Image (tube, rainbow, N blue to C red; front, side, top):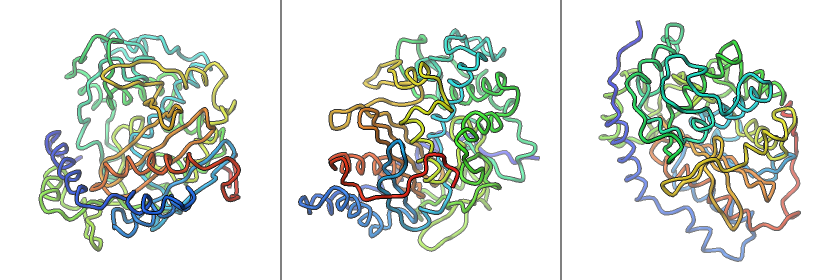
Length: 400
């Protein structure tokens, strides 16, 4: 029987608050960059990452800047370059791509009511509103800290879990009148994909996204038992943080690993459509390159246009389909970050520059910094003139 853990929203929030406070004592990684303003942007970026490594902010770190043909700059240390990472909420971009692909195939429309696909939903909201976080769906913790372990997987009933969570939830505002980020919304979209596809979410993503790009199952997927070398999910040894997380997780969920407390390497995300992606940096670069060049193997021209169109705004935020939209150095940035138990991640697209980036790290304690390090490195490298990046191997087909 699956173990019963405490539904501890408050504990999770408190633990993350403590983690963020702990980060404040670390010297900003930008110090070493700003002290050498005459260095080239690529040299500054490498110096930035070297400073992170010296500060022991993360055991492993990997970052790449890429264009529509592949990576043009990359730097890693620890297990970063060769490992798969839990990428958490950045999985929402893959879910959004799958919904758009199903629309291209005539299986659904973005303006369908969610209730048209999920009969237990009565909210008057559309798929487009869910995709752009403008439906008003709240953001509760779903299940036990969002994860379960391999010995529980065969009995885990995620549809029942989401039905229970949705039944207890009420919309935060009238649909389409504001925006509010919602993991629950993307968990529901995972069920929509399953209904429209006629199989599991994992099978749908494999057929609709991974296989068209020849992505290896060991490099991108949702099953930790099939992943290649998996970067450990780690937290610091702050006693209060450890105590709070121990209340929410079983005793055997952690182990000591040098200066870190490591979460068991293998666990399943309860709802993969909002945060269960396990992926290598190179595989993520492959996917982002396909997005930059608007690869016809994934979406039609009209769906690519929708993917890069603002959908909803409110509370100082703007969302496209899946992405948050911002401005950086005078150009549009489509960005998504992810973080949770032991991992932080960020991905970004700069359509006008034909560039994208991915940053994956393994430590909960610096989740705030992990979500900012990718954009900070982007900011440095966007100053680099075209044609000055060192030559690198490029493989847009993801097959090697």
